[in-house]
Image (tube, rainbow, N blue to C red; front, side):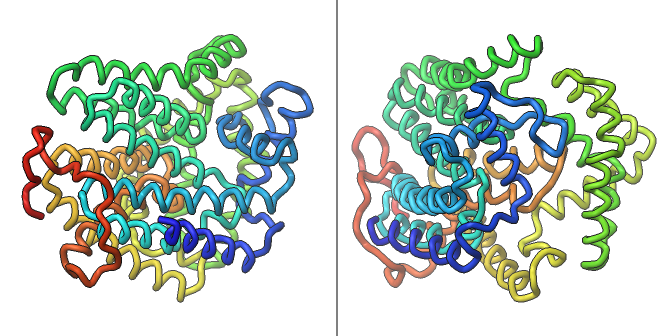
Length: 422
């Protein structure tokens, strides 16, 4: 595992060095740092440092403050922390794959795939929250699996809390909340208690921030008010125009128009008429529903285009050069195929169903709102890597790297009898 950690860290630090330790090009980087600065200056969480009329989820700004000891403009430190988080995630994915499969070869293969995964390497190169979210979700998956296999109440509570912390970083993580009911399907004594405790862990993690929002805004906002504007952006003419782009020049023109829209267009009109976060979010949803009602054919076509956009294996041809588009297409085509085989071969049907649900639920949530290809990496890539690794080992046998057993096989029945042959 040390070799996996080292490989992942070296690749990420090398990528950071290639793009530079101090530049930031990611659109949300400035908002994250400004939010953290505002917290330090005012000792209160700000409502309006975003380009969009929303307040940001608190998880990553809080991490920026803590990880830099109160210097949120230390961009190089943020990037190095992202490299460290990414390297830790590679090790955790290796351990998770090993626990599921009972195979050291699968564990090592998953670790190597996670270490070299171009998407994960890319995510370390700027000030963005994905690395922290992925780490929390992988920890959540490991604790939930342990709770189901060991019957541990403590692990069930921890699993729920970790999902809550992930949601405080990226609210869309709440779509995975149904997985907390997995202990109810696992059978055995205490299953109702474990499921209830897992849900309680989620509630307890969110409660302080949700209560803060209720006291401040007089409304129920579990994390923040971003859902409405994201739904609006994904289900109105602005997104319909995006899917009509045919060239890089079109993409650049769209970007300019989008900035104008955010600064002085319909978004600002809605925000001005609805100053409260909860009512503003609801107003964006209503406005988008009016567009959907008036353009049913365009909306159905938009849903189809968003679905394809989520599933496409290659990076955007408007934003990336052709070699990157081709390389990512090949990488994800292979990863998709191997992961599908691994899911089909998985003998623990509960694990396979949980993996499939982790693929399905975020896909539905994003297609219903707004699809950005980068968002898929958070939810899909860990699942793809775990199951693709099992399939790859099955195909290549002992030629695949590694060979040390990683803990007891969790594919074995609890009575201690041997696991079924793999």
